[in-house]
Length: 331
Image (cartoon, rainbow, N blue to C red; front, side):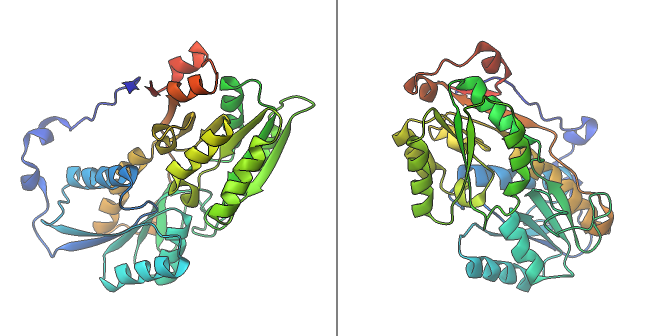
């Protein structure tokens, strides 16, 4: 892998010289945080995201096992199991819950109306009913949003940039785990391709339907694929990439795990960064701020990852201008 952009973590002047434990708050009882993740425990990206959250908390003086306990529950496709995980975390009497992905946040909302909740990477939280407004969330919930509706058009433009022959684009998502997905469709369909081009919307509810949708895309002339942000799909990145490779189709994804598993390329916000930023809201709430008074924030860092091996296998030449914009190139 060739890293195209190096990010430097600033430790903060004189504070960096102090031992971390010395900077941690020592007064008061042990605090507790429950984390409901939208990734499998075995997923390296999920581990990277929770590590970023812990790093952010440590820099603010919250050390796991020292003055805070952090309990995790990981992704499951089973709605009842997810709700049970949320109830388990609530039963531990946490001071705050952190929820990642729409299904996880929905489970947390059902489990409590009083414990503060900080969500991470939630698309369109107002339309989904999680907060009253972005500026004044109200209630017990606030956090950090995900991609905005205009991202749909960006994915189309990038796919056509790397694979200009694509005319028929199949868009795949699971409406149960990604009920927000329709917000991307207007911008996605608004991109002018050509009179003969077409956009096929293919919602899938199971692995069988997923395989069927990808196979159908392979049978369409000059086909390409867009996989929308979706915890159902993201937890099956290797399987998705294998099915796409079988059809020999160019595809764009929203997270890098697809690309590192052999997918062509991905573009989306840096999820580890937003977990790191979420630590600041956890800190403020633990110190007494009301979540309903903290405005919803959105990603500020985005990453483009390209797999040159896959491009070569598909007979594609990645434009130098696209390579120059890449944060990471796999070759």
